[in-house]
Length: 146
Image (cartoon, rainbow, N blue to C red):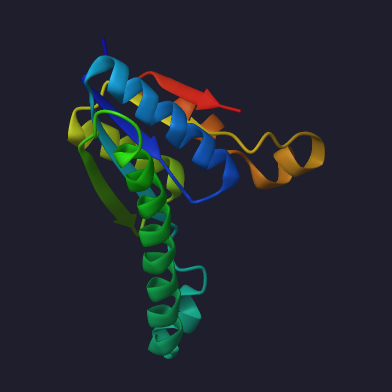
């Protein structure tokens, strides 16, 4: 049923649970799996222009964190029986929800799978939810794992 699954990963516990689900679905359906990590835009753009070292440090940390998140998914893909072919993508300079949806469209995916942090109340109102935004923006079906 699913030929290409996009897994949105950020290395969190919720993301790890979604990764397990994505790998299982990819095995069941014989799907391609692409893990995407979105490095949010540099939060201090005015400072970054004056101090390029800050921007370079920020991006280096984001790239390292993405590599760790992708390594977790890769480990799941090689465990157990049949190994799953995994593509990894690091998307930069775009908000997380937009980067996930844009990657799904560019890759021709037919499912986006992601974790939910399960925030509620004031935290949800103040912080917003990447998962909520992806569900709202995506023309591709989205499976949110809790």
